[in-house]
Length: 394
Image (cartoon, rainbow, N blue to C red; front, side, top):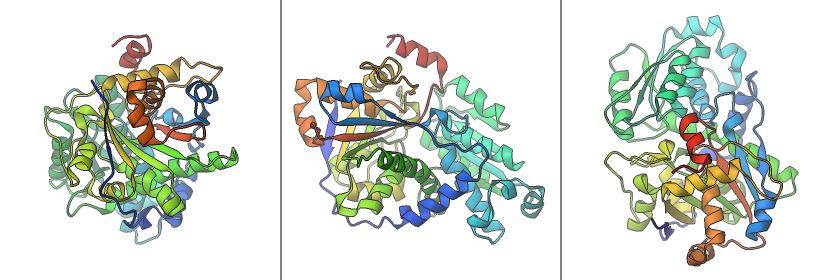
């Protein structure tokens, strides 16, 4: 299948990025740094690959090391839950570091809360983990086709979790509906809709910790990224990353491309139509964490204004990226990149190697001066599938 792409013909680079302003990201970062599990995840420099492809540098943020949960999603869920509890307590999040957040005192003050969410796996596991740390309940709905291994990992965190006979977007609606039937039920979802914007905003700010770390790590290397490629499901991660760099660099922010699977390419289709579009159906894709057909309305405002390119990819691009990470050349460090974490890496390699993709390469602006930042957002969250793919299976 072909790679599809669309230049942004909507954006004026004028949408407010205040939600990802430095002070907001620092609040989230300080919150996460109060966790005893916190360590900065690695930024892998693939200098050998960069040299072979003819670019100045390729840098991959490896989120397989995040909180021993094998994915970045816990950053958003935990921060949103912290902000929600701070709101219940009428205090600032700065007054609620991890030790106080999990204390018996706080639990007595807020009572019993049940956190509901829908997920393909990573977000739900992060919410379940955070709820477990808080001594609270969590209920997690997964769309059909979800990996049983991911379901079991969520249950091991103490959640009530099920795989439903519906796609991701319908599972979100189910979580929202069921939360209203439980005393002190609240939805912690990384997408937004009319009337549900506050918690998704907090989640995006929580993801800002990852963007801040990557930017700081690059600064220590003396590198300013010229290009950022970030994958999109509902777009919360993409909007957070785009918002962070736009807030920091303004008109001079790196050239940013949004990458999606063909089966759930709602942002690409929105870019083509120059208006908000959704994708229905089963949304089956190897990139399960990106199998979302309805863009987050908050992040979409950032992406349509600031992002440069929207790209829709076949699943084989993600599989290629996984194999490159697992079997690097040129002396590069190997790392584990899961299905939803690898499309950016696979795309960069394909675009630089295939002459028939010259038009896309030119649209991206890749050349010998390019320093490219990517985000590998998960490790082997489905180990059986991961092993099949890196071993050369389809």
